[in-house]
Image (cartoon, rainbow, N blue to C red; front, side, top):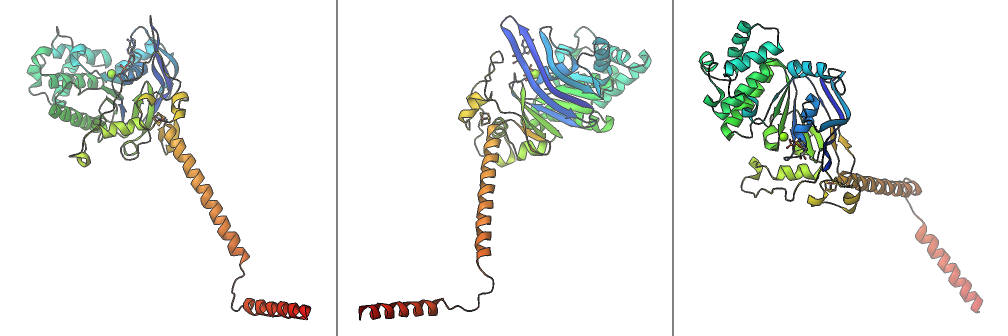
Amino acid sequence: MALLEVKDLHTSFFTDAGEVKAVNGVSFNLDRGQTLGIVGESGSGKSVTVYSIMQILAPAGKIVSGSVKLDGQELVGAGEKVMRDVRGNKISIIFQDPMTSLNPTYTIGHQLIEAITLHTSRNRQQAWERAVEMLRLVNINDPEKRMKQYPFEFSGGMRQRIMIAMALACEPDILVADEPTTALDVTIQAQILELMQKLQKEMGMAIIMITHDLGVVAQLCDEIVVMYAGSYCERGTAEDIFYNPKHEYTKGLLRSIPTTGSRGQKLQPITGTPIDLLNLPEGCPFAPRCDAAMKICIHKAPENMPVGGIHKASCWMNVKAQMEADLAAAEAAREAERAEAARRATPAGIVDDITREVEAELAAEAKAHAEGGEA
Ligand SMILES: Nc1ncnc2c1ncn2[C@@H]1O[C@H](COP(=O)(O)OP(=O)(O)O)[C@@H](O)[C@H]1O
Ligand code: SF4
Ligand SMILES: [Mg+2]
């Protein structure tokens, strides 16, 4: 049994303008100690997916259907008491902007101690020691002194690391990192990601890493879910996604990230705008932006299809490729049958032949017959 099993999750926002279908049938599993990447452009439903799992949606948001199981326990409909325990002790989240989560009017130490005493059985003295230990773990120098400082006294990278410390202080089974590095410069980004990997090894937790940048998850994730318009258009191992992508959107994402192989080549951003979630099209939501779109893509949405192992994708190109492969296989089978029939009609071991002699004799006979007839 996986630690977290998300099945066909649907979440909508019921607004004055209508039902915004933010998450439309997302499924994935996460095992202990594993890292799952959720990748997609802004507005594709990444945050709403994890907010649904944790049930921290804005008031207009509702899980419409689907299942979220943590350690086998169904969370959809489980009630606020269960969810408070889940949020406190089992799943922690690091938000994109640490300033929105850190209270500017309290010291870092106060906030860390509050979180620790709330979510664990430690008393205030033990919580203070734990907080210092966590700050040291996330590479904050002189943590005893830093505990007494306010959020504005720290750099953006440090605040992000404090958020990680706060999330980890509750010793969660799953750490959700919602674009934790987006606001940071590249060097700090790399440090934060490295730190998260190190902590994961030490603490054995699972991580859900959300990002709009496929490049970020390349070395980090065991499995990747690529989201488009609230659905996952493709999911698979990091190797599947990077070396054998089976959805045109994923292929586009890969063309738009710099790699060592693409040095000197022009990167191609995906053009066009995301789909309106108030009016989802009947066909493939990526069709208006897809260079490979066929007629069927416009009026029929492709289903999620297995394309090998745990690799799944929803793109008609895979059906087309399968049909072409089936046709080629059928033609090859017919050709083999024809060859076999010809082989069977030919007797084995022809050593001699009398065709020429018989034909010559028949011709002579016919000639004699003709001459005799004339006479
Ligand atoms: N509070 C809200 N009210 C209405 N719609 C929302 C709300 N929050 C998110 N959405 C809708 O859900 C979509 C997905 O949002 P989100 O999951 O935050 O995207 P991202 O992939 O950037 O994290 C948005 O494009 C928006 O249409
Ligand atoms: S289903 Fe069609 S439109 Fe959608 S990604 Fe595949 S080829 Fe493009
Ligand atoms: Mg988001």
